[in-house]
Amino acid sequence: MTRQQLVEQIFTKQTYLCVGLDTDDTKLPAHLKGQPNAVLDFNKAIIDATQEHCVSYKINTAFYEAMGARGWEIMQETFAYIPNTHLTIADAKRGDIGNTSHQYARAFFEHMNVDAITVAPYMGEDSVRPFLEYDGKWTIVLGLTSNKGSENFQRLKLAPPKEDLPLVPSVISGDRSELLFEKVLETVSAWGTPGNLMFVAGATQAHEFEHLRSIVPHHFLLVPGVGAQGGSLRDVSKYGMHHECGLLVNASRAVIYASSGEDFAAAAKQIAQEYHEEMKQYLPQKG
Image (cartoon, rainbow, N blue to C red; front, side, top):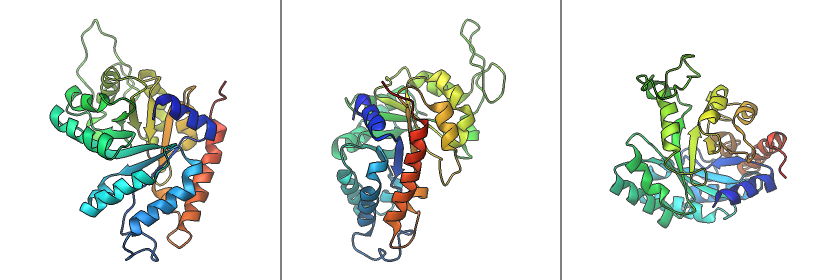
């Protein structure tokens, strides 16, 4: 899916919701447990119930890898079931030396045929570049995440750059040094374009979105952390949105586990619809 197609879907449907199919086979409704295709049936029901309220689905691959070979089959069958009007994301957080990343890219872009994959940038450009070589596909690089451990590395203060280079005013420390996540955003954004590169930005860091936008003003941001993790959709939209929206806000547990009963799909639809209705209020007028 191209950027133009994604933007058209967002403004046509008036939503930028991404539903996370992080399906834990131990948390399925009781009436599905023990059924031979329980996870796949659950996923299909969620997709049927929510597709009119979202523009994307994200699968965290760990939940499927944990089920062994059958889990990979379920993941592939789930991706195949998602309508082609929706951006599909493999939340795999891959990233390794170039020839290994090339194989990861083949696995997800060619065999799974997903639109996008999340990538960890720690090993540098040669570990990210193979994903960017696929036309019509998206590489979503970890930028500023919402987990507690993000403090360990992402916010480390870097040594001052050479005097002839501009200093980045850190939104966290208040001084004019540069933090690691700022350097990641600045550097990685030059490897691709706003048409094939997104960044992950955690919703619990909503007060920093204005600063993130000063570094990557045109790229899409994939935003986890709204819902169960307590992020504010209003704040994310206020500080992170640009004229083409530029946001995919992910909700996983809040949607798919809205009910543990036989009404789980209807409950998921209700929550997705609530997000949809709120998002309509924040989208800019297009045209």
